[in-house]
Image 1: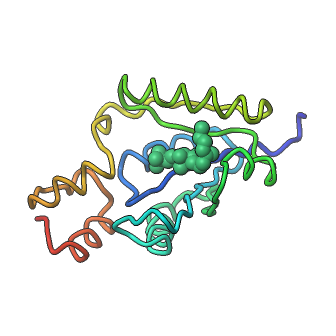
Image 2: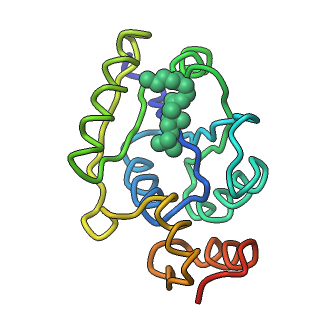
Length: 165
Ligand code: PNS
C-alpha cells in the first residue's frame, strides 16, 4: 500500500469553472500525487458552454498545476474511479446546504463502492457564495463578476452572452 500512487478526482459540470472550483483544485492537488478533474459528459444536459469548451477552459485555468489531469466521464463516478485506480473523491463545501447534499452523495457513493473514500474540503471563506449558476444569473443583469472567475472565463462569458462589465 505504501508505494501506491494516491489518485483523487474532483468531478463536476464546470459550466464554467469558477474561482471556487480553482481554490479546491489548487488545495486538493497538494494532498494527492495525481488529481484528476472529471468533467461530466452528459449530452442531454445543455449548459452555457459545450463539453469541449468547458474542458479547454479548465485546461487554460489549471496549466500552472503539474499533477492535474483533465478527464471526461459518464455514468457512475465510482465506476470511473474503480476502472482508473482512483481511491478518493474530492468535494468542496461552501455552506450548510452543501453539507447536507455532499453527505448524502458521500454515503451513496460509499454504498456503491466501499473502497472509494470521499474527502470534503471546506471552501476558502471568500469563495463561499460562488456557484457557476449564480454567476450566470447575475451576469444576465450585467453584474461585475471579475472577482468570481479567472480572467479567461470572464472574457468567454462576456463574449458568449454579450453581458457583463
Ligand atoms: O457540478 P456538480 O453538480 O457539483 O457535479 C456533481 C457530479 C457530476 C459530481 C455528480 O452528479 C456525479 O457524480 N454524477 C455522476 C453520476 C453519479 O455517480 N451519481 C451518483 C452520485 S451519488
